[in-house]
Length: 181
Image: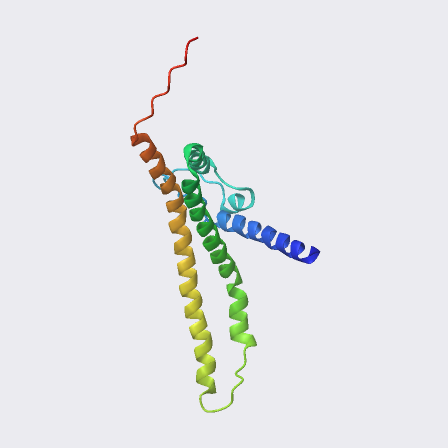
């Protein structure tokens, strides 16, 4: 039991570090970047400074405030739907960055470590085809994961905005006047 808890804790810790690294690289996002792209006149901290200590949190804080506003009056179904967006976004983003970071290991394995095990006339063709198919498969999966993460970054916040707009359109129930005794 201790080994399972230890491995699970280690995996969770590694995932958090990987997620943070990807966020620092700009590959992984919690929320969509609001507004127009920053002008070139804006002075930015060097890339490595933002990667190591974090960057500007202004947009993140605004988005977090929107989510908090959404959560106040959200019913259980709405909270559950919102959480689905979060889970899909995080899973796809984490798988994408993990795959991206593991790419060098896969390339070394395919280029150096794999030897054809079948003798015969077509063994060279089969050996060449397997890594090619695996690379194509890897690229397709990576594009899909990155796309799914990017979609759910936007969908998650858009969902909160839709619910809040719908709430604002509903007529408010009158508050009963306090009874006087």
